[in-house]
Image (tube, rainbow, N blue to C red; front, side):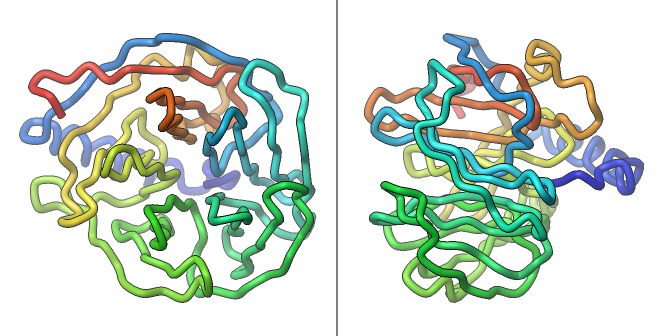
Length: 260
């Protein structure tokens, strides 16, 4: 999410500024170390991010500027690129077999793309808002801006369940971009500098990753230029994070005491 941030900014900040701070006293809070930095397109309103076999996959939002881009980390030049219907607001992205699957915000339509060519294979419909996705095996976890994740079957995109996300027994709303990392679901919390690390069995936040200061290093000065985008290089065990319209993607290492 999303361009209309200014419309709901006051409400979002009053809610979200309080929630993570209150939860932090019991849920461990990790800081971070920057290990490397790579270029990021400042025109990319990042919604979905994933990394696999040497390539970075990114979906972007905004009507008329939503697209799917495949490139290498070291350069902004796309290897492949596809435009999303300009009448919709593009959202999250996930891979499945030889496909990429993407969502839209409030349009209720999703897309299947050929992973190798980005040729559009088909569309599907779903209820509710679409924010972000990640996958473990044959289960897709999808955020919709609430404190619950929807579980979906990637073959049909039918909803198969829900996962309520809590910290110290309180719902964690505005879950945004997602990534599956070593058996955990990592989730950006919209309009904050924090990532929630979630136990997929219980929905409980096991620790917070506080990325305060990263946005300023990436030139994120606009109110909409929030932290959003987590990618995991499972082969080299690298974690990448970025934000909407940032000028860099950062490779980071969480620093947790106690370990989170």
